[in-house]
Length: 246
Image (cartoon, rainbow, N blue to C red; front, side):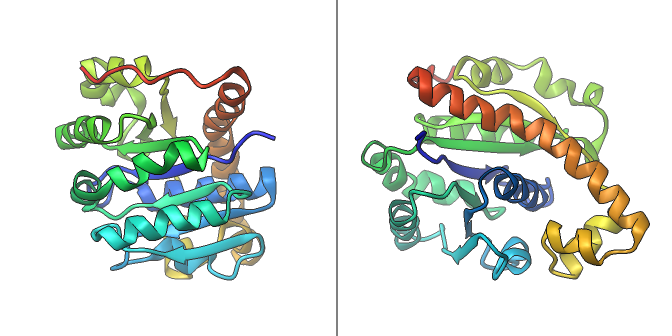
Protein backbone atom coordinates (compact mmCIF):
# COMPACT_ATOMS: atom_id res chain seq x y z
CA UNK A 1 0.00 0.00 0.00
CA UNK A 2 1.40 3.45 -0.87
CA UNK A 3 2.72 5.44 2.10
CA UNK A 4 0.56 8.32 3.30
CA UNK A 5 1.97 11.77 2.51
CA UNK A 6 2.60 14.59 4.94
CA UNK A 7 0.92 17.63 3.40
CA UNK A 8 2.06 21.06 4.58
CA UNK A 9 -0.28 23.90 3.62
CA UNK A 10 2.03 26.89 3.37
CA UNK A 11 2.30 30.43 2.12
CA UNK A 12 3.78 32.14 5.18
CA UNK A 13 1.79 35.35 4.66
CA UNK A 14 -1.46 35.81 6.53
CA UNK A 15 -4.64 35.99 4.50
CA UNK A 16 -3.52 34.18 1.33
CA UNK A 17 -5.99 31.32 1.92
CA UNK A 18 -4.07 28.56 3.70
CA UNK A 19 -6.92 27.66 6.04
CA UNK A 20 -9.51 27.29 3.29
CA UNK A 21 -7.08 25.10 1.32
CA UNK A 22 -6.60 22.96 4.45
CA UNK A 23 -10.37 22.60 4.78
CA UNK A 24 -10.65 21.51 1.15
CA UNK A 25 -7.76 19.03 1.41
CA UNK A 26 -9.15 17.52 4.62
CA UNK A 27 -12.53 17.13 2.98
CA UNK A 28 -11.00 15.46 -0.07
CA UNK A 29 -8.81 13.08 1.95
CA UNK A 30 -11.82 12.06 4.03
CA UNK A 31 -13.83 11.45 0.87
CA UNK A 32 -11.10 9.29 -0.67
CA UNK A 33 -9.70 7.47 2.39
CA UNK A 34 -12.15 7.99 5.25
CA UNK A 35 -9.53 9.29 7.68
CA UNK A 36 -6.88 11.97 8.10
CA UNK A 37 -4.52 13.45 10.69
CA UNK A 38 -4.95 17.21 11.10
CA UNK A 39 -2.03 19.05 12.66
CA UNK A 40 -2.99 22.64 13.40
CA UNK A 41 0.00 24.93 13.90
CA UNK A 42 -1.79 28.28 13.95
CA UNK A 43 -1.98 28.50 17.72
CA UNK A 44 -3.31 32.08 17.63
CA UNK A 45 -6.33 31.47 15.39
CA UNK A 46 -6.85 27.69 14.96
CA UNK A 47 -9.82 27.91 12.60
CA UNK A 48 -9.24 24.56 10.89
CA UNK A 49 -8.86 22.73 14.21
CA UNK A 50 -12.10 24.31 15.46
CA UNK A 51 -13.98 23.06 12.42
CA UNK A 52 -12.62 19.51 12.40
CA UNK A 53 -11.84 18.57 16.01
CA UNK A 54 -14.30 15.78 16.79
CA UNK A 55 -15.22 15.19 13.13
CA UNK A 56 -15.61 11.51 12.27
CA UNK A 57 -12.42 10.11 10.75
CA UNK A 58 -10.25 13.07 11.81
CA UNK A 59 -7.57 12.94 14.47
CA UNK A 60 -6.95 16.63 15.27
CA UNK A 61 -3.83 17.79 17.10
CA UNK A 62 -2.19 21.17 17.70
CA UNK A 63 1.56 21.92 17.75
CA UNK A 64 3.63 25.10 17.80
CA UNK A 65 6.12 25.12 14.92
CA UNK A 66 7.77 28.28 16.21
CA UNK A 67 9.54 26.04 18.74
CA UNK A 68 11.88 23.06 18.34
CA UNK A 69 9.59 20.99 20.56
CA UNK A 70 6.75 21.51 18.08
CA UNK A 71 8.74 19.96 15.23
CA UNK A 72 9.64 17.00 17.42
CA UNK A 73 5.94 16.56 18.25
CA UNK A 74 5.04 16.79 14.55
CA UNK A 75 7.48 14.02 13.64
CA UNK A 76 6.17 11.84 16.46
CA UNK A 77 2.55 12.35 15.35
CA UNK A 78 3.44 11.44 11.76
CA UNK A 79 5.27 8.37 13.04
CA UNK A 80 2.42 7.19 15.29
CA UNK A 81 -0.27 7.67 12.66
CA UNK A 82 1.34 6.41 9.47
CA UNK A 83 -2.00 5.00 8.34
CA UNK A 84 -3.42 8.52 7.85
CA UNK A 85 -2.48 11.28 5.45
CA UNK A 86 -1.26 14.21 7.57
CA UNK A 87 -2.54 17.71 6.79
CA UNK A 88 -0.41 20.37 8.50
CA UNK A 89 -2.07 23.79 8.47
CA UNK A 90 0.77 26.27 8.97
CA UNK A 91 0.67 29.69 10.60
CA UNK A 92 1.35 32.96 8.81
CA UNK A 93 4.82 33.29 10.35
CA UNK A 94 5.88 29.73 9.54
CA UNK A 95 8.92 30.52 7.38
CA UNK A 96 10.95 31.47 10.48
CA UNK A 97 10.13 28.14 12.11
CA UNK A 98 10.96 26.23 8.93
CA UNK A 99 14.32 27.96 8.66
CA UNK A 100 15.20 27.39 12.31
CA UNK A 101 13.78 23.93 12.97
CA UNK A 102 12.56 22.37 9.72
CA UNK A 103 15.64 20.18 9.57
CA UNK A 104 14.05 18.03 12.29
CA UNK A 105 11.29 16.93 9.93
CA UNK A 106 13.58 16.84 6.90
CA UNK A 107 16.01 14.56 8.70
CA UNK A 108 13.25 12.16 9.77
CA UNK A 109 11.60 11.69 6.37
CA UNK A 110 13.67 8.71 5.27
CA UNK A 111 12.96 6.78 8.46
CA UNK A 112 9.30 7.81 8.39
CA UNK A 113 9.07 6.52 4.83
CA UNK A 114 6.51 9.25 4.05
CA UNK A 115 6.71 11.83 1.26
CA UNK A 116 6.58 15.51 2.23
CA UNK A 117 4.28 17.51 -0.04
CA UNK A 118 3.84 21.27 0.32
CA UNK A 119 0.87 23.15 -1.10
CA UNK A 120 2.10 26.74 -1.35
CA UNK A 121 -0.81 29.17 -1.63
CA UNK A 122 -0.10 32.45 -3.41
CA UNK A 123 -1.82 35.73 -4.06
CA UNK A 124 -0.52 38.07 -6.78
CA UNK A 125 2.14 39.86 -4.70
CA UNK A 126 5.90 39.48 -4.91
CA UNK A 127 6.50 38.57 -1.27
CA UNK A 128 4.58 35.27 -1.72
CA UNK A 129 7.24 34.28 -4.25
CA UNK A 130 10.23 35.45 -2.23
CA UNK A 131 9.07 33.40 0.75
CA UNK A 132 8.52 30.38 -1.51
CA UNK A 133 12.12 30.49 -2.70
CA UNK A 134 13.32 30.35 0.92
CA UNK A 135 11.06 27.37 1.60
CA UNK A 136 12.39 25.46 -1.41
CA UNK A 137 15.92 25.87 -0.08
CA UNK A 138 14.98 24.98 3.50
CA UNK A 139 13.01 21.83 2.61
CA UNK A 140 14.84 20.27 -0.37
CA UNK A 141 13.08 16.89 -0.03
CA UNK A 142 9.60 18.38 -0.38
CA UNK A 143 7.56 18.22 -3.54
CA UNK A 144 6.05 21.71 -3.74
CA UNK A 145 2.84 22.50 -5.61
CA UNK A 146 1.82 26.13 -6.06
CA UNK A 147 -1.87 27.01 -5.78
CA UNK A 148 -2.98 30.25 -7.36
CA UNK A 149 -5.83 31.33 -5.09
CA UNK A 150 -8.42 32.64 -7.56
CA UNK A 151 -10.03 34.66 -4.78
CA UNK A 152 -7.39 37.24 -5.79
CA UNK A 153 -8.33 37.22 -9.48
CA UNK A 154 -8.32 34.93 -12.49
CA UNK A 155 -5.24 33.02 -13.65
CA UNK A 156 -4.17 35.73 -16.10
CA UNK A 157 -3.51 38.08 -13.17
CA UNK A 158 -0.82 35.80 -11.71
CA UNK A 159 1.70 36.74 -14.41
CA UNK A 160 4.38 37.57 -11.82
CA UNK A 161 4.53 33.90 -10.82
CA UNK A 162 3.65 32.39 -14.19
CA UNK A 163 6.57 34.02 -15.99
CA UNK A 164 9.10 33.50 -13.21
CA UNK A 165 12.21 31.34 -12.86
CA UNK A 166 10.67 30.23 -9.59
CA UNK A 167 7.80 28.53 -11.40
CA UNK A 168 10.28 26.67 -13.57
CA UNK A 169 12.18 25.60 -10.43
CA UNK A 170 8.97 24.35 -8.78
CA UNK A 171 7.98 22.31 -11.82
CA UNK A 172 11.53 20.96 -12.31
CA UNK A 173 11.23 19.48 -8.79
CA UNK A 174 8.06 17.64 -9.79
CA UNK A 175 5.61 20.25 -8.53
CA UNK A 176 2.55 21.55 -10.30
CA UNK A 177 1.10 25.02 -10.72
CA UNK A 178 -2.65 24.80 -10.17
CA UNK A 179 -5.66 27.04 -9.74
CA UNK A 180 -7.53 26.91 -6.45
CA UNK A 181 -11.19 27.91 -6.89
CA UNK A 182 -12.81 30.89 -5.22
CA UNK A 183 -15.53 30.31 -2.62
CA UNK A 184 -18.18 32.98 -2.14
CA UNK A 185 -17.41 35.15 0.89
CA UNK A 186 -20.71 34.49 2.62
CA UNK A 187 -20.15 30.73 2.54
CA UNK A 188 -16.53 31.01 3.64
CA UNK A 189 -17.75 33.18 6.51
CA UNK A 190 -20.31 30.49 7.39
CA UNK A 191 -17.56 27.87 7.63
CA UNK A 192 -15.22 29.85 9.83
CA UNK A 193 -17.64 31.80 12.00
CA UNK A 194 -19.73 28.67 12.60
CA UNK A 195 -16.63 26.49 13.11
CA UNK A 196 -18.07 24.02 10.60
CA UNK A 197 -16.51 21.18 8.70
CA UNK A 198 -17.52 21.01 5.07
CA UNK A 199 -19.64 17.91 5.75
CA UNK A 200 -21.56 19.67 8.53
CA UNK A 201 -21.99 22.79 6.43
CA UNK A 202 -23.51 20.68 3.65
CA UNK A 203 -26.08 19.43 6.15
CA UNK A 204 -26.81 22.63 8.07
CA UNK A 205 -26.53 25.67 5.80
CA UNK A 206 -29.42 27.16 3.78
CA UNK A 207 -29.99 25.64 0.34
CA UNK A 208 -28.36 28.41 -1.70
CA UNK A 209 -25.26 28.37 0.49
CA UNK A 210 -25.08 24.57 0.21
CA UNK A 211 -25.34 24.79 -3.57
CA UNK A 212 -22.38 27.19 -3.71
CA UNK A 213 -20.41 24.97 -1.33
CA UNK A 214 -21.06 21.87 -3.47
CA UNK A 215 -19.92 23.75 -6.60
CA UNK A 216 -16.71 24.77 -4.87
CA UNK A 217 -16.18 21.29 -3.38
CA UNK A 218 -16.31 19.72 -6.85
CA UNK A 219 -13.92 22.32 -8.27
CA UNK A 220 -11.52 21.71 -5.37
CA UNK A 221 -11.69 17.96 -5.98
CA UNK A 222 -10.57 18.43 -9.58
CA UNK A 223 -7.58 20.53 -8.52
CA UNK A 224 -6.56 18.45 -5.51
CA UNK A 225 -6.97 15.09 -7.25
CA UNK A 226 -4.20 16.14 -9.63
CA UNK A 227 -1.92 16.25 -6.57
CA UNK A 228 -3.30 13.21 -4.74
CA UNK A 229 -3.24 11.01 -7.84
CA UNK A 230 0.32 12.12 -8.64
CA UNK A 231 1.40 11.02 -5.17
CA UNK A 232 0.03 7.53 -5.76
CA UNK A 233 1.72 7.35 -9.18
CA UNK A 234 5.08 8.58 -7.86
CA UNK A 235 5.02 6.09 -5.00
CA UNK A 236 4.37 3.19 -7.34
CA UNK A 237 6.99 4.30 -9.87
CA UNK A 238 9.66 5.22 -7.32
CA UNK A 239 9.86 8.87 -6.33
CA UNK A 240 12.42 10.95 -8.32
CA UNK A 241 15.03 13.06 -6.54
CA UNK A 242 13.98 16.74 -6.34
CA UNK A 243 15.79 19.14 -8.64
CA UNK A 244 17.98 21.86 -7.11
CA UNK A 245 16.59 25.33 -6.50
CA UNK A 246 17.88 27.94 -8.93
